[in-house]
Amino acid sequence: MYPSGNLFLPAPHGQLEAILKEPRGERKGVALLLHPHPLGGGTMHNKVVFRGGQGLNDAGLTVLRFNFRGVGQSTGTHDDGIGEKDDARVGLDYLIENYPNDEITLAGFSFGSRVGTETALNDERVVRMICIGTPVDKYDFSFLENCRKPLLFVHGENDEFGSVENLRTLVSRLPKEAEAKLEIIPDCGHFFDDKLDELKRIITEWTVRQLSR
Image (cartoon, rainbow, N blue to C red; front, side):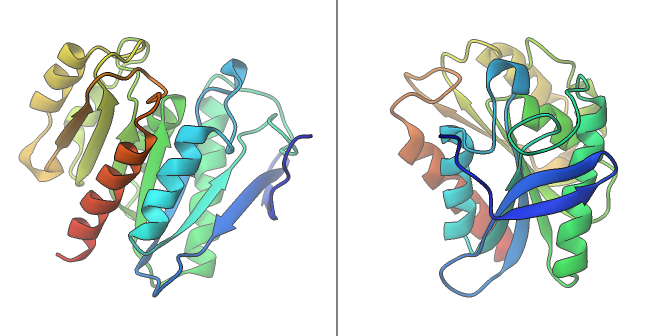
């Protein structure tokens, strides 16, 4: 049985099925976390997304994740990443409305990293970004060369959709203001195989450092 969310966000096409999870201790900010490609089976329940959310929770962030249009109980149909950027803005609007004084961190896995970073690049509401399994061999990420926000990349050494060499080249082209941090996890592919705990740790530690500045 498909697991349900605990929240529905109003959207122009109807609704987005979502899950909102608060941290155990004091809230230090909020985060929006986006899932991988819907046509490849991506949902907000993906194991990488789930574990990434735990990492953000452990850093003290309230985490919102949702199903893109056409996934689960979200209405609408897949829109090749165009309408999905509007979905991401719906998530950001929800966080701003309900947590107006909190900084927003945006994170995305695979397709979610592409949609999320392009959406958040020039959105002043988002102060930092996290790319998990960045599919640099599949999508053009050159727009990040205009990034002026702290940015973490977490990547598997054997990622099938983004070679480490190509990702290093991208990171080398980012401006100093991005303070780009690249963490390569050895001996794993795009879905981080048995390295999910390490993925979670890296996300937590980087976020904690960012929040303490």
